Length: 64
Image (cartoon, rainbow, N blue to C red; front, side, top):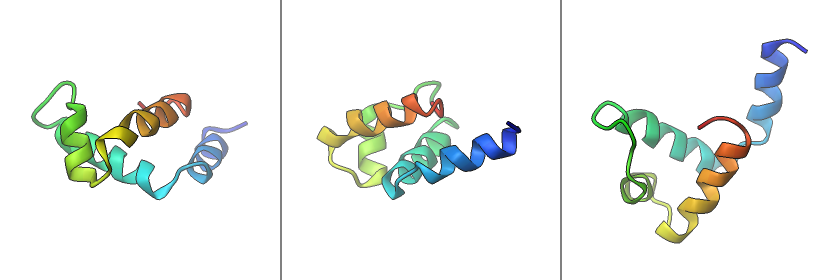
């Protein structure tokens, strides 16, 4: 399976919140080696209690 096919399969599994979290992490890495969870929650506008779920989902997809 090509890397493009793998990318398409992973992209199909992403939720809108996942894309927000990824964007915040990418932006935050300009200033931090590791972006704090509270900043991810704040800028992605996701409740802090749901951040662990989002990060676990992105980790299972090998995106973070």
